[in-house]
Amino acid sequence: MSSIKTASNVTAPTQFLDVRGRSYAYRRFGGGPGLPLLCLQHFTGTLDNWDPAVTDPLASGREVILFDNAGVGRSTGEVPPTVAQMAQHSTAFLEGLRIDECDVLGYSLGGMVALQMVQIRPSIFRRMILVGTAPRGGEDIMHLEKPSLAKRIQDPANRGYDVLKRIFFTSSPVSQAAAAAFVQRISERKEDREPAPGPKVANAQMAAFREWEHFEGERFADLKAIRHPTLVVNGVHDEMIPVSNSYRMGENLPNAVLLTYPDAGHGSLFQYPESFTRQAAAFLSSSSESAAF
Amino acid sequence: MSSIKTASNVTAPTQFLDVRGRSYAYRRFGGGPGLPLLCLQHFTGTLDNWDPAVTDPLASGREVILFDNAGVGRSTGEVPPTVAQMAQHSTAFLEGLRIDECDVLGYSLGGMVALQMVQIRPSIFRRMILVGTAPRGGEDIMHLEKPSLAKRIQDPANRGYDVLKRIFFTSSPVSQAAAAAFVQRISERKEDREPAPGPKVANAQMAAFREWEHFEGERFADLKAIRHPTLVVNGVHDEMIPVSNSYRMGENLPNAVLLTYPDAGHGSLFQYPESFTRQAAAFLSSSSESAAF
Image (tube, rainbow over all chains, first blue to last red):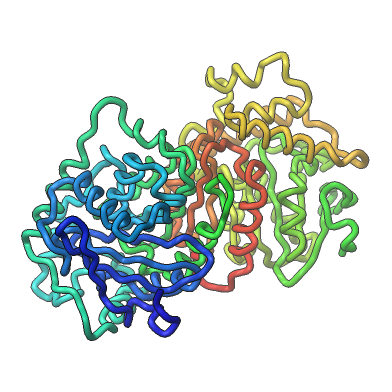
């Protein structure tokens, strides 16, 4: 358990867990009455991409566990090309920590991993928060080659995290101001940072998105078996994983509340961290069988 | 001002306000630091159709004002056949009460009236809650002739409020249990009740729905000018005014948060009154320029 002093992603030390010959990088901080909250990260994101304005308020009521999947950051091995294999790593990591049940915050690619994990082992999660993500068979998932996105991603003016301002936020002045504050926050950590993922990580994760778009049989039927209280969150102008995917989760998960944010894109949780953490904490603190909170 | 003792729609006396030769029936109860909350009712609904489990918790932080539009309940005159004319009545009623600015809870038809009011006079509302409703140009609005709805509405087993169990809730056991509790709550008031609206009310309001489906120019462009913080709420299985209409409001209103409830139909606010009033009160209590709360 980390002390209060280090209950922040700005200062929490990176730890390493050895499981079956692999080493997984993670951070674990905070505490309180809640179950631990496993945080599963987005495309090419590492531990350092978790906004302290999101993780730290949540860490005041429970342990927050940030996790780099295989091949990401300082976790060893290769990034697997399917969500199913990523879910095996996440599950093995929780087993290695001897955590039988926790809550999960799955963001973007991480939300897909969470959905896959809970279908294989329903008891692993009590409550799920799925932000900016898509179910298997979802539409228009991470097509970075789309002209609207490619133009912004390839802009030579992007330096470091600047691209995140362009693709996680809208072009409005208010959203761009929130983007600048977000980049400032994730830059606060100065030491013990993760290496930036290269093209191998991006290529394998992109293959996983392509595979995730496929479905067999009745579309979204797999969601109907997930009875877990779930909070689905998205920005209405998400161009990376359109909000329609969140609508389909709200409609097909039998026990999901949907919350959408205005003037927001893929990074809605980073644009509205006060609202998001207030809603997420209220949702996680509920002991009801219903997702309504 | 009503005393605490009568801060309930079970006991609040019906009052009558004369404005320009018309008499409007209303109830006004509760109090607190918030602006008054004007509640605009659904198709064929009267003051008696407001669930005390929704109105009473909200009345602990502000005055709640329930209103029968012209020709409904004991309000005099004819029900007009357009939302625009209904909005004129609601606006005249607020003027008669000398209320320059308030918050609004518009449910179903009442949400359309609220949207019309705020477009004509933006300063009339500070914050808006729109439940189970549709913007002008919305789709599949109150087509009670659809086989799926007609079958339930015309079921001879329906007595009194029983039809509401069939059309405001889903067929799941949990939703039907909530339906029975809702009907029990709106039946608690025994005296000073409103007369049940007849076919004239239904026919004129249905004409208003048909007119509201029409739009000119760019669909939903009218929503983009409404900057008010707005909370849009719906059940994902609403068959009377499908949730897609709420999606379009979340996407086109520039400052709207959307909240959807699982296993719920048109009456989501009555199915989850504890969650709804908690969320609504938090939203109304915010003084932010943003709808995010």
